[in-house]
Image (cartoon, rainbow, N blue to C red; front, top):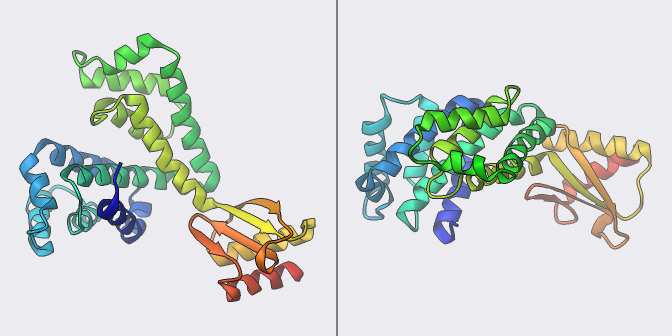
Length: 271
């Protein structure tokens, strides 16, 4: 698990390249996973890209020379962003790249809103349940004597023909390159990424008094305008809530400390 500077770098990178991940989707995720294979295979490359003595320009130059002609501009932008940040350990760079690639895959499912992400989450968790229920399947998926493609084909069959492109990629990746963990654990990590993105579509609303149907409709409209997307509202009542209402969407909190947005929501609720 990443801590300190590495955790901060991953958070900053996800924010910086978020629009690229949203646009690139599964195709971008495939490119990033391919780049991760290169990073994992070459220790000298990892050391260079995480060496604090190397300047950002020097690291970017190395990324350009290795990947510039092999990946799309979007993938190159993501790789250079990660390479330019500070990492506490060599492996953290690869772990971050794996997480960012999973976010790109999940972003494609996210084009269907909360429902799309929920469907992807359901695929991944259902796959894990199938694996966990059979020791034979677990052995087959981790048999290093079996060709990678044979294990990936088994994973696709277990996932089902109707699985989304994002689900197929994340499961295949977990089986083909689990990076030191069991495939089910790698799928769980991907599911955690999906859950993190799902939070961006859920508004946790705390109000001082129960809301009527019309008030809820107005609040939903206000949230849609404030966050530029339709959110699933989870409403709870707490008479002590400051200002009469508190809304949390992911890490974004709207309460008395953000008076202008709060007042705007309250005006819409009041009509």
